[in-house]
Image 1 (tube, rainbow, N blue to C red):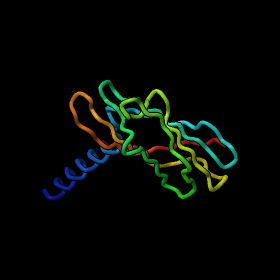
Image 2 (image 1 turned 90 degrees about the vertical axis):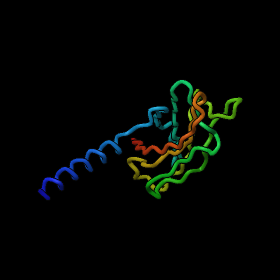
Image 3 (image 1 turned 90 degrees about the horizontal axis):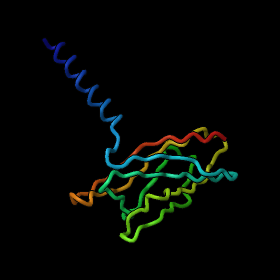
Length: 135
């Protein structure tokens, strides 16, 4: 009987873990691209596409962190709307400096805040990303 409980517990735990790992933000989709390579500098373009009635806040500012110390953020730029939201018609630009020439991919986390204009709630989103540099 104890073994059956362990199997059920393990099955439930694995299902919850898998669902947690693949869960995406259903209110804002994102896409990450590389704009340019100049020696040791790269610009990452982050395109955000919120569903209708959702906006992405400019304050607090979006944040990018890398899982490796091989990349350093130089600047994060984005345009704002008249309501002080992030202008999603243009990408967020993250200028970075690569500390090594042998970096095949950049892995990190992108954090931002978004709100429902109709329902009046806000939420924080953190997305993991991987970008191939193809140098």
